[in-house]
Amino acid sequence: MSAPLLQVSDLRISYGSGSHRREVVHGVSFEVHPGEVVAVVGESGSGKSTTAHAVVGLLPASGAVDGGSVRLEGEELVGLPERAWRSVRGARIGLVPQDPTLSLNPVKRVGEQVAEALVVHGLARGAAARAQAVELLTAAGLPDAGVRARQYPAELSGGMRQRVLIAVGLAAGPRLLVADEPTSALDVTVQRQVLDHLEHLRRESGTAVLFITHDLAVAADRASRVVVMSQGRVVETGSARQVLTAPRHPYTASLVASAPSLSSARVTALPRAAASAVPAPAAPAAPVGRAAAGAGEPLVQVRSLVKEFALPGRGRTQRAVDGVSFSIGRGETLGLVGESGSGKTTTARLVLGLERPTSGQVLVEGRDTAGLRGRAWRELRRRMQLVYQNPYASLDPRVAVGETVAEPLRAFGVGDRASRRRRAAELLEKVQLPADVLERRPAELSGGQRQRVAIARALALDPELVVCDEPVSALDVSVQARILELLVQLQADQGLSYLFISHDLAVVRQISDRVGVMRHGELVELAPTAEVFTRPRHPYTVELLEAIPGRRALEEVP
Image 1 (cartoon, helix red, strand yellow):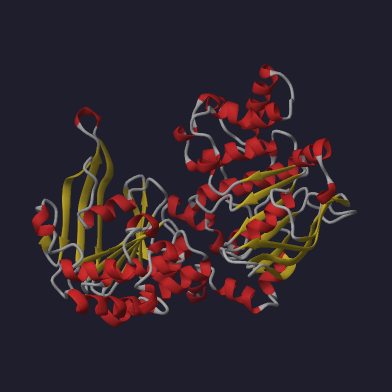
Image 2 (cartoon, rainbow, N blue to C red; image 1 turned 120 degrees about the vertical axis):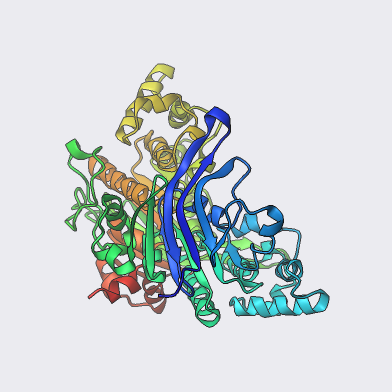
């Protein structure tokens, strides 16, 4: 094998100052060879991004390398002066950061931002730099690159902005590209397109890739070797096949078991005694408490639902929901899946009465909700609650958790202050949070804990239908698995019905009884979950299934 392009040896990194300094990366070692893709995998707080930032010399002011070595083509990078870093960063090591919304200048055209990388490294100037920028955007897979180069980041989709960052990262022809969660915020089909193109560029240029991700399925699909990190340490290194089929460390095994795209197992309700034990995902089984799903009159019926929004310009409209019909039975979970802009969230808002339909009906127990007003409407709203995608944004950062959970009770005049507090404590216990969380603020909780608070708040008024709008998309896979188990447990205990919104078919497969697939506002497929995954009828459903990460790696396993 050739000499390593990148060699990280016994790397130790700390944050803070003085006596408050804390080591967060503990003796990390790995290698990346020319043309190789190495994925560093781990959950939030594992130290993977901190390690990547040390490789490109971009640790924050409070961060420092306390020991170890980072060598690029044999040259030591630890302790390199900033002036010397300018000839390394971008020219020899490219970076594709995680969030293009934060990484791109919102007031500068994207073509200028790509050209700037060429100018900084003395590769081109003026008209030549602008022309090369268009070529780089084309190579990065951006359609109509000449037109897009004159646009601002806000005028591009998330996938397009990510391609701009790839063009910037590869502009100077680096030997190594560090890609830090480059597709974590993208729909699965867009994710696949971006990663496919990144792989194509790597093969053409021979650039090695250090791929940072929390998604083991994506890593297994795209990397030749996988480095698994936990709590600042490397716990396992191996080929993608070995890590998937024979993980040696319990933490790696838990990541494999928790990744929805690597398992077809249904999430099932746990026995009450084990509900707080954080077990491994259960094997496929008949869902507990769902036998009555679909029996009798549906709880919710949606008939020929249409929603149009006015656009700038006289008489112009956009049809966000186009003739959608479905039902949700008591105790049933209906998964609604589709990419951003497919209309699934607008459909959910119509079901909840947060938007009024242009035409069509939403019926609850056979009663048309469109004609309800006053007390009748408030009583209906009490029976339907919402869990948002981002719990940090949906929870007031200034208000203690206990008050947040009790707020629906106060809004509906239920009980007095003392009884509402007792009810909040009961709800937190129900979602498996300790009693002391009552006094904490959202910022003091982890992402998974905040999502549990949001679920507790949604349950305060004993609803019959809970709409979950991308409730686990921002969470690490093991936290995601725990939240899905909690939702199923609550359904088994209370007979809840769920409308579960997601862009991720792998997640929907684990929790749903039936799946509806939306595209451009239309419901293009609606069938039992097993049927959607084994006998999809619509070409778009097939496309979504093929885009699920981990499929390639699993297909290669004998």
